[in-house]
Image 1: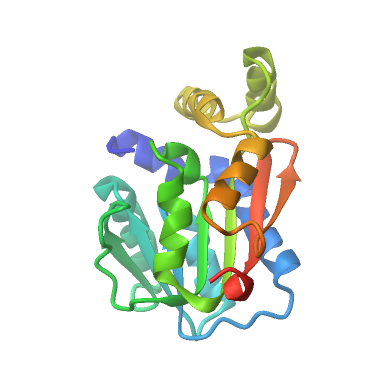
Image 2: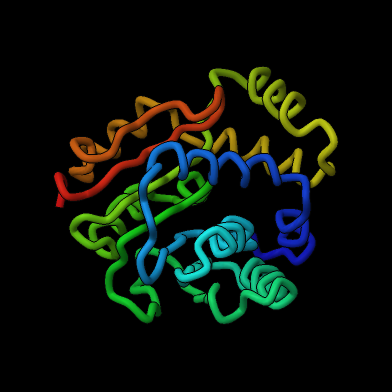
Length: 217
């Protein structure tokens, strides 16, 4: 995600439905959760979700981490346009390296469509142990790998009909790189998170792993 055109496409309106879905899941899975001082977003991309969360929770900082300078630039520009630059803060970093964050642990950690970008998926799950408070709320949403190339193309055609070719191409690549529900379940077992995170299909082509870590840390 180090191409400026690619970063601009992800910051555009074509993925609004995906960002909306994440917020709907957040409210559905944590209906009574009132964020405290800060939320950590791992793999924030252009920060579309953090910016929306900032408007919903004006007393809470959102700390956004991404390995792409162009994605962070898109997020920073949007935060400035929306007057949220003092609430939504950006940090360049890549897992599993130590992240340059102002806090050591967080009460809420989120991630959207980040897992399938990692060469080693355990990097994300292990990061929860490192950056979550013992009773932290966690919401991870990502793609599920279709059973065939034909099914993957049908997903792209159905859910991104008007998106530019660049996003169509990226979506196909992402679906190919994604994991099955069974593979994600095995990852949670390996990371000792299966007892505290509920794994479910959020949509026909996405999973959600969510819960509180008080049982697992």
